[in-house]
Length: 419
Ligand SMILES: *Cc1c(COP(=O)(O)O)cnc(C)c1O
Image (cartoon, rainbow, N blue to C red):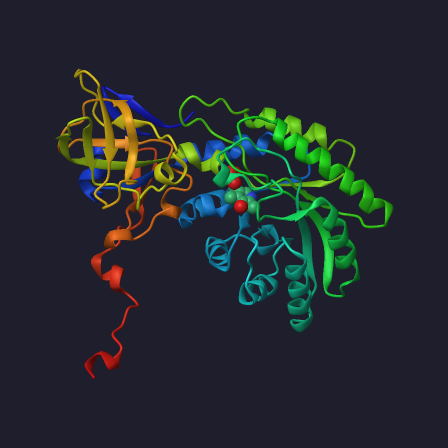
């Protein structure tokens, strides 16, 4: 359920006609619905009602400060994967003791930054990282709270690029080595063991991979208890999928029930790191048709948004529905919706049956709230799109469209070019 709906054949976001925003802001732009963001967060959080838990929104899905601030005000914590995301999180007002830090490649400066901020825990992904965190915590005369990210070797049955819990993936520490990791951690002076973590992948559309992973982790928790190592937090990661096309992922309540059943009797404090399921369907990308072109074998809709704005179609072969901002009676066409970039991979949809949008028409790329703007780039020196948030009948530009000046900001000419 989201708040992008047609009224009199015109697409609205809550009570604002999208056409109006396009006239004011230009295209392309990302558009987020406040009501949808809020609703999705609350449904997810309330699915775990009655349990000790902390929902840590996964920043990398959507790091806009307004989006982060909204979740913070609803009681969310934050899952970060970089110093930059920590900076954004603190900037948005998150209390450091609600921030968890994952990622295989944490740099010394990033570790120091997180230690100084006083985050809830580091999700450690290698033995070398564990040693480095211990060393930096010692240097800063503090204790580092850690969980070990365990790779449970389960197949999440999603796109290979977003599977993270298989033996061959770079993430986490395998089950056998994890025991050694915990033993090692228990001997390190500046490490406090607080939890266990796993995150097996993204856009997962059934409960079984999650519960399979937890079954494995339960054995590990038993083994740890036998050697006197107790954990407080069980971080089950994110990964719950959404409907882009015809997927039918479990409802958050169903997902919660599966997880809670798996962990019954263990007396653990749950941490969850949802990203896509909260923001994915709460955002769209709005673009204008620049031209139409009939090729010998294909019909092309050439749009002013491209792969630099939304990378998912070309990166993952991802499906995003294409919806006209103004519905017409015209018969549908089958076309490739492509961007202006000089790459054959620059498409938003391929061989897609869509409404007959013409030169100058606006259309929406649906379900673009997660991994949309955050993955965008300046390729082909294209200024990144604006981001807009709607609440009821109001809208606000939460990130301005970049300017040409932004594109060259920070570049400088070396004096030796004048030699
Ligand atoms: C990306 C990521 C998430 C969020 O994944 P979603 O599929 O968007 O829910 C959670 N935890 C970690 C460690 C991640 O890298």
